[in-house]
Each structure stands twice: as structure tokens, then as C-alpha cells.
Amino acid sequence: GDSVTQMEGPVTLSEEAFLTINCTYTATGYPSLFWYVQYPGEGLQLLLKATKADDKGSNKGFEATYRKETTSFHLEKGSVQVSDSAVYFCALRVGTGGFKTIFGAGTRLFVKA
Amino acid sequence: DAGVTQSPTHLIKTRGQQVTLRCSPKSGHDTVSWYQQALGQGPQFIFQYYEEEERQRGNFPDRFSGHQFPNYSSELNVNALLLGDSALYLCASSFRTRTETQYFGPGTRLLVL
Image (tube, rainbow over all chains, first blue to last red; front, top):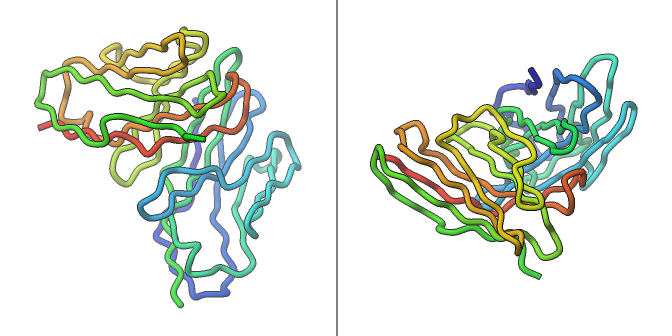
């Protein structure tokens, strides 16, 4: 079945460090891929998305490229800030007629000043 | 412009009881999806409603049912509650089922004792 696997956390980095959170997926058809973020005390919100192979999604300095050959959608940021501390979820969206979004288990990121 | 709203914010029930959770979509949105998020896990897709019909369903038993009203608001009903139903229930809305971007509500936290 359709699934998303992302690296376990927590991930702890110092400010200005480089971030990578790995995400791989299994899906039939051609899913759209997403990264969502959940900041402390806030609701889930879309960070970035990519709808087809080789698309790059980007937002707030974060980037992820849809790699069909490796079924991956790794999240990267060149220089993290304390304010990036949150839980990050990789997700895919599949379906016809109606659509369902499948989430990974989440990766908690702590950024130290 | 109000975002996605959910009620109640918190709820405590006992095993075997029934519960109804409510969701009002963001203005202009006509599609509602429901998710269950257990503590420390990613959201799991329950079902999606569009034009008052269930369009897609995840791997949840028939104890989980829903409804969408003509004003696009939605209810999630859970019968015969189990301890394992304790979770944060999230509602997300979008415009049409195919739209990539979903907006999530703050959730209803359900505790089953």
C-alpha cells in the first residue's frame, strides 16, 4: 500500500547548521509530495510541495526535490534558525475522484542558539 | 477570513460511548478531510467529503462515519469508543478534491477513559 518513511528524530542542530531530513515513499501511480510543519502550540501547515517528478518545492529557505527514480523527497535547508524548531512531516497525496494524504511519522527538529 | 474551525477543542468520553466532532471549512472551500493523529505520530487519513458524499476512505473501521452538510461543514462520528481512539482529530479543507493545498484546523483532542 501507499506509505511514507521519514528519518526518526529528534534531530538536534546548532543555529546556522545544514539540515537534511530524509523521506522516501511507496505509492501506486503518480503522487504529489508535501512537507508539512507543526510549530509548538500551532496547527499543521503546508511548508512546500511538488506535484511531478523533478519538481523542486521551496519555501522559507527550505527545499525538496521530487526524485521518482529513488522515490525520495528529502527536505533541506542551508542554515537553520532557532525558529525552525518544530515537527516536520513528509506526506504524499494519491487518488482518483477523491484523494487521500498519507503522512510519515514526523521528525522533531531542535535548533540550539 | 476565518480559517478552519473545529469544535469542541477537548472532549472526554468513556469506552463504549459515541462522539460527534464538528468542522467548518475555510471560507470558499467545499471539500473536507478528517485525520486521526495519535500522540507522537503523523496524521492518519480517515475520509474525505465532497458534495455531501464520502469520496475516499482510509483504513478505519465502520465505527468511524461522517457527514457533510449543504454549507460544506462536516461531522465525524465515532461509535463504540475504544481506549485506542484517544487522539487529536484534525479536519482539513480545500477547494475541490483535486486541489493540492489543504488547510488544517487546530483539532479536537479526544480522551477515552
